[in-house]
Amino acid sequence: FNDVMGCRLPTGEADTLGGYIYSQLGHIPNAGESVQKDNLLLTVEEVSAQRIQTVRAQWLSPDAREEEGK
Image 1 (cartoon, rainbow, N blue to C red):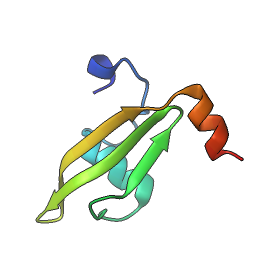
Image 2: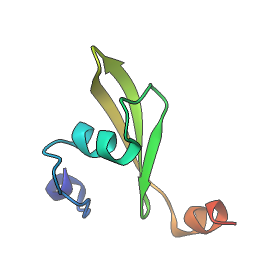
Image 3: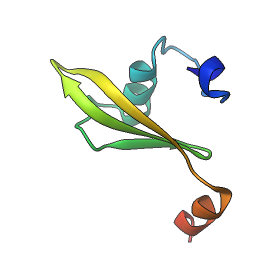
Image 4: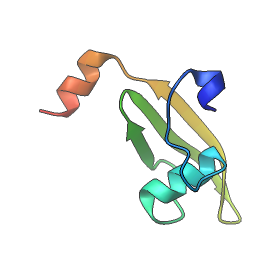
C-alpha cells in the first residue's frame, strides 16, 4: 500500500492494510469507521466474517486537516 499510494504508514506488526486499521482502532471495525494518518483518511467500506474487505483511501487537503483540528 505504501509503495502504490506513495505514503508512509508504519508497518509495525501489521502485514496488511486491514491489519493496520485493526491495530489503530483496537477492534474489528464496522463499515464507516475511519482511521486518519497525517493527510490520509482510510474508511472501512465493507466488513465480512470479521475481516475488512474494502477500504476507501482519501487524501485530505492540508486545509481540511487544519479545519478538523479546530
